[in-house]
Length: 185
Image 1 (tube, rainbow, N blue to C red):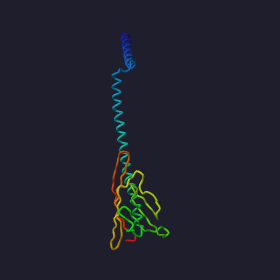
Image 2 (image 1 turned 30 degrees about the horizontal axis):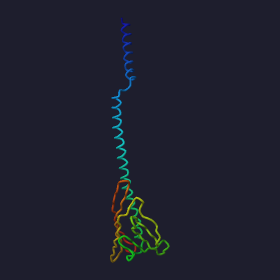
Image 3 (image 1 turned 180 degrees about the vertical axis):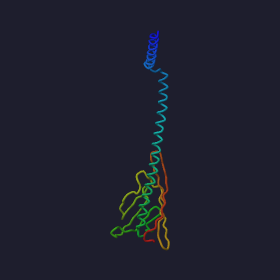
């Protein structure tokens, strides 16, 4: 009797293994496939939206960096030219044009002109265009030069408004500086 019970138990265990294998062989029902597709679609939408947010954030950060960097670099170039100048040519200068009398490294006289032309901030040396002080995506909305004259010194106060365009995003930022000419102190 003990032998038959063991055989029956082994046989019933073998049958349960076949049942499990049979469940995997029969495939998926249409309802299961639809549920899996719905879960996959929802997960795909979440992942794609996350990527879109990351790309948009990167574009915004890049735009802010380009605008700040471009404004700071151009403001530093203008400030350096003002510091090195002998004087401001106030007769030929206006609110959006700065003309400086300066000297080069050899001691020769030269005229520096910084002027807003359209949306560009152009830099001239002795009447020759050196180039735009801003990058291609940056637009100069406003630049103003206010002249400061005291008994002891001469200076220039600069206000510059720049606009950066990337795709649909637009950012506007103001930059300010006040510079005293080297011969003024």
